[in-house]
Length: 295
Ligand SMILES: [Fe+2]
Ligand SMILES: [Fe+2]
Image 1 (cartoon, rainbow, N blue to C red):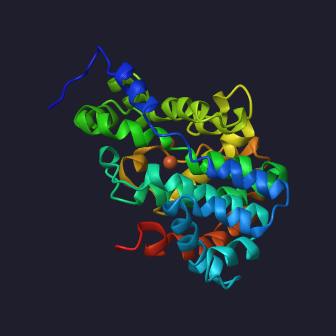
Image 2 (cartoon, rainbow, N blue to C red):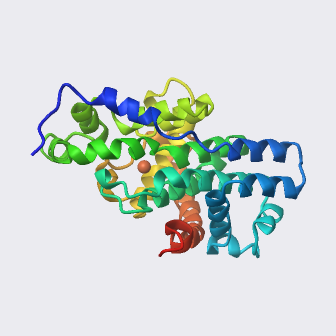
Image 3 (tube, rainbow, N blue to C red):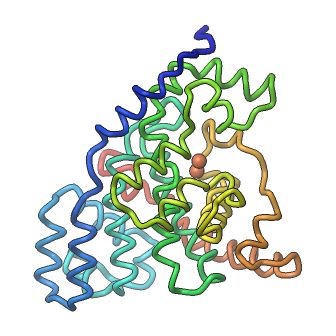
């Protein structure tokens, strides 16, 4: 059984994070073209430049989640039919797939499962974001989508030291993050924050990722981190994101104050979440959209 490790492999882990390919430029290009109200053909050309992203945008837009509202046969249909916000969200999700889709075996997540969890968290965060006003919706969606990006790198090391990590969770009662830190010298939350900063995401997205397990500790943008926390915990509770993450504790109800949900609003909030989940399942359970053509 692998034993406690000091000296921690954290230096090596941060180096591995530096080797992670940059976030695809296509997202910034699409945003800029939409701002300029560029012709559809220009937006289509930018998305099509990366075949994998274009295929993913098409697969997602054809899922039952969107098919209820739109009839999408081609990439052009998707660009025309979806509003700017929905198109950006969809391209963002397609861009993130390459980091999340592989098996994340350290966290006992099969191929596609971390991506499913990330998309679930992002879609649920939209319902949470409504409480904070539309202006923050894209920020919260982005942070929610990428909140577990640290796992894409840390998985390899977690796998090597999984016995030690699990022992610390089950015997010592540590939370997952504490067990990661005590064993590896860094946790997936801190690593995710580093990656998001390196990818030049704005500070509010970086904070949302860097405090998604402990929003109250964020010195700024607590509301973004709290929204991601609630969405993450909800996705996990709904069964989207099991694996080792499910060992993380239950909701800390005090976090709801940060996003302006008082205890007498809980009932309505959960009713909204349940309605949203019914729609969201149309995407999350679409095997072709989530797990690709091979499924
Ligand atoms: Fe996490
Ligand atoms: Fe998560």
